[in-house]
Structure formats: structure tokens, C-alpha cells
Image (cartoon, rainbow, N blue to C red; front, side):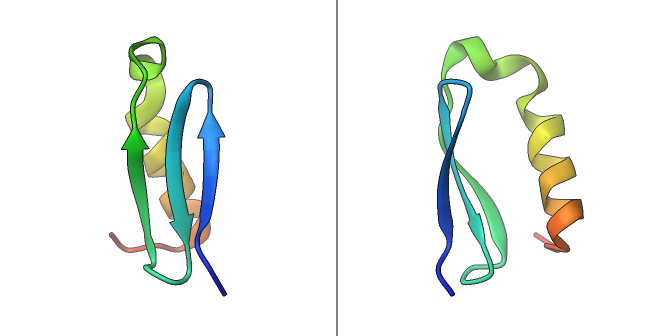
Length: 50
């Protein structure tokens, strides 16, 4: 299974079972507030340790 590229607001993240991580690929300034919390919650929900 491959990782998924996803647009959150105007930012781009990559996540999935291939690397078992959540990567913030591109952070748009408009998305700064709340992005870290969103990424943390996504990692917990997907069972990703990193």
C-alpha cells in the first residue's frame, strides 16, 4: 500500500503505511494555526508512532 498525498487547507501532507509517518510537505502561512494539532491527531488515529 502506498502513502497518500492530501491537501489540508492550502498545505500538503503525506501519510500512510509505507513510511508509517505523517510528513508536512508544504505549510501555507494561512494553515499555521492548528496544523501541528491536526497532524498529531491524525498520527494517533492512524496508529503511527513517529
